[in-house]
Image 1 (tube, rainbow, N blue to C red):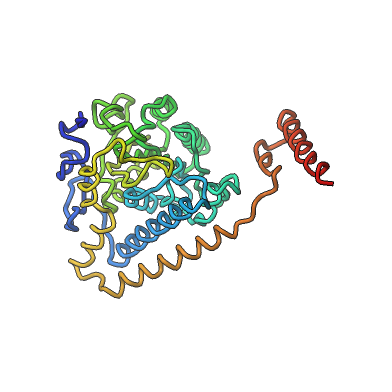
Image 2: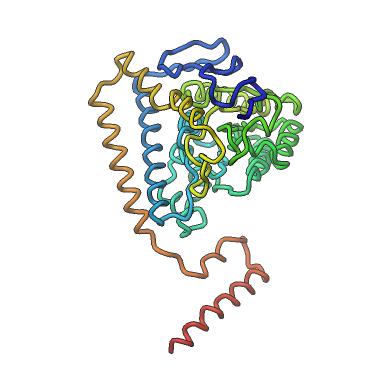
Length: 372
């Protein structure tokens, strides 16, 4: 059994949150206060957050089923990380720019990206099928950590243009060991760029546990680069919303970058090509199930008589309808032309790319000649 160096206990088995964790809603659905972070939410706003959480989980379930049926090539599940994504996604203003990795399906939902466009990427029929300018949501990035430099550069551009917006970049705990992420920290700190680094610490970088990544909590790494870091309960949508909103406000007001470590857990596999039972304990998974981000909001709504049985049933029904619609439209996605892979790679013609395209076109044409 491995030991979590940050807390001196097996990773994930301790039911108590780390003492430095910002939490506003306990796993039992009890509202708690924090001296530095708070958020005022109406009953309708809380019910809207609950709706987001339920729908993105349903979309994730549909994508997993499509993958198992051979309709998607692979899928990176967000199961267990819904609050981290919805809380931070709803903290963004329309003109803020978000830079995802490849698991931020909940943030995509918050930025009004059609879920079918996301599925098209994993189905292999598009080059990430949405316009980043229309949604202020960048394309998915498969190369670990490289989006952090894209976001840092974008934030520096906001600064030089005299803008009043901010950038946020998402990555996992494993990406903090990548040079790109640390270089983005250096540049953003030195330039006082308006950026929020949002690390979803789901405890496992594929099969590598957190204690093999860092000897200190990840949020404390920010100290060495000269900007603040904060650890938030990543399964608490209230706390994530409050912390992210404040970090973005600080960025917009010229106070520079912030590192947010959303302390959460990846309930499923890293991707559908992974088998987590080979490297983590079932007891760890069961402990985190008790911290489910959806159930704690549901408990809060029930305890405070903000929602009844009919409300929860209506959300479940809506989620099923949206899931069925997304499944249907995904299966109807047309296959692209074989040469479409060369489109939208460069803004202008590129001789090497043109040569490869012509060679491939000639190769395809050879099959037509054989069948005549």
